[in-house]
Structure formats: structure tokens, C-alpha cells
Image (cartoon, rainbow, N blue to C red; front, side, top):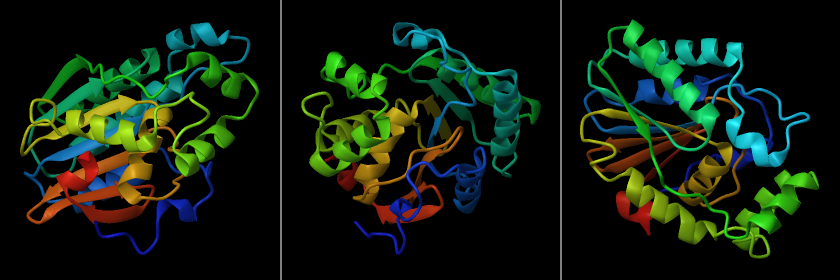
Length: 240
């Protein structure tokens, strides 16, 4: 794997970036007609304030989130490439609402779109009670840093070295991301973070709304973009 000259860890872990701009810029740098896999965080969600953690699955996106996701879909479709866009949701309600809005925006630009429902790729939580303790104690960022540096968080999470290759194997399966097409997966920052850590081999920042990781197929392998940084790699490095 060729490491980038600057990695996503050069920015603050929680630095806010423009909704989807990094993803769109990197997608536009890739050759049309090649396989591209785009994995983004959902759009702006409704606040968790006064919502029990057990009910967070049902929290959707805001009206602004819908509007921004549609605009993202229009921009993603307006890349001069007429290949089909495959759109999946992976996770909770807000991921599927975002996927629907992106698909609608892409269709407005005349892009062929398949809205393919839900991906069931599983999550990294191995001990929900331990994970819940991190969240409710307000130590989410500490949990992510510990996860990347130590491999796990006291048994609460599957190690990144085990989790990420498995997910990459499933995502890069041609049945999920066909050759010469764009496949978009909308999920949670918690799912994207370990994939980026694995691809770049470093602690990375958390993706903002509609930000995420892009994998582009090239003649020599794969180019991966995340938060404005790029690395060159291959399928074997991502999936082992």
C-alpha cells in the first residue's frame, strides 16, 4: 500500500467539513466508466436530545437533511458519466431516508438509479453494555481513539483489523458494487471510521454529514479518498 503524503489524521477528529464536498470532489477526479464505491454518513439528523438510546434507531433526518441529500444526489449524478447509480441504506432509519433523498436527486438529473434497499453487513459492537457505557458517559471520541490505537475497547468492539477487511470484502463483491457502475452506501460514522482507519493505516477524523470514504478502481489497483486525503492501494490490502 502507498501511504498518502498527508493523512486524514492531520485534521481534528471532529472538524466539520462541507456536506459532501470532499466526496464529490474525489468522485469527479475518478475516470468515468470505472467502478466507484461511495460510502457516506447519513444527512443531518433530528437531535437525540430527550430520546432514550434504545429509540435512536427510529430517529430520522431533518427537513434540511432531506434538501441537502437531494442536492448531493444531483451533484453526484452530474459528473458526465451516464453509468447506473446503485443506492443502498446500511443502518438505521436516517440512513434509509438519506438514501431515498439522494436517489431522488440523482433521478432529477436523469441518472439511471437503482434504490436497492438495505444492506445487512453487521456492525462492530461485540458487547452492547460496554458500548452503551461509553456513549452515555459522553466518551464517544475517547472510545474511537482507543479503538483505533488499541484495536478494541475493553471487549466492547470487534477489532478494526478483523472488522474492516470483512466489510470491505462484502462491499467490493461485484454483486454489491458492479463493474463500471457507481454504488453508494449510506450508513453511520461509526461504520465508516474503522474502514478509513484500515485503508489509511492511521487515526482518522470522524466523517461529517454526507462525508465518507470513496474507493475508485484504476488500472493499477484502487484509489481511496477520505476527508480530502488520498491513498493508493489494492483489493488485497483492503480485504485482509
